[in-house]
Image 1 (cartoon, rainbow, N blue to C red):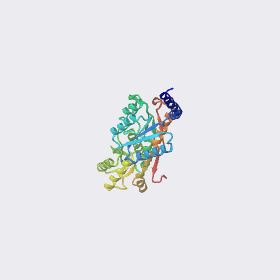
Image 2: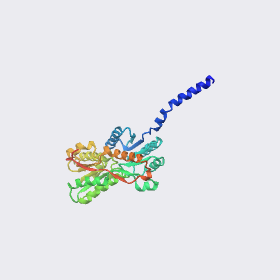
Image 3: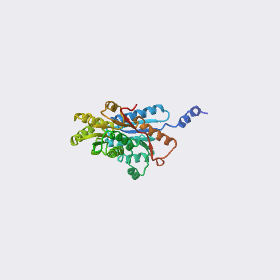
Image 4: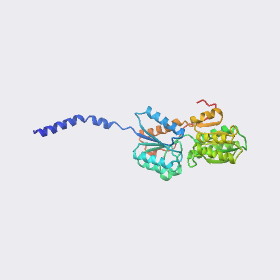
Length: 319
């Protein structure tokens, strides 16, 4: 046996000795990667949502990896579409999304589904007709926004009378949750016999809502209440009411129960809001998608609605 052959045999033996460690690594299944794509992280509600998701992942670090991101403002739909495209390229296993637009995100979500990514919808429900057109089924995990808004509307309804003029500041009008909250407010106002004299979009944000509220008050000086589709817009309305010299004369309600609204609830500038437990919204979606992954379900096997809780919050509500 030549020295060259002997060296090759020794090297081969060494390689065989090293092999047992490789299968052990190969047998260890990689943790699934879950992407969380939200709306504007400038909105306290979505920052709270993200923090809740990160806390959940930290407590379940052995179960999954989390990639979270959001857009710069509530109407930046194109950037959210790009985020989803990035997650497809990143080969995530699952995607939990709070869509900025109920219809515009459906085509890119179809791409995600076609790439083998499980998709779960939270916060703002995707448009049923748009999903049907693309031939996909996406489960919605979240609260009944119409029911939550009616709770808030019913509360302010007890403090106004039949024939009173009220206004509604809606979120982004193309979003399902904005539409549902408006319907809930309208249900409550119809029940008490109040007249909705103005309905305009405040884009979910403080500054646009402030501008809208100021215009509403100017055009309709007898408004007795403003019902805002989220707390950011309620804050904008409160500022407009103050500027108009009508503090205490126009009632305001919101939706979301963010921390920034609590001082206003305490001093009466805002009468009520709805708590949909923002810190858990993404968690509910993540848990749903992890269960589907564990059960090896396909997107076509998913669908329907998993309704989560929503509660009325007023000055007297214990947090």
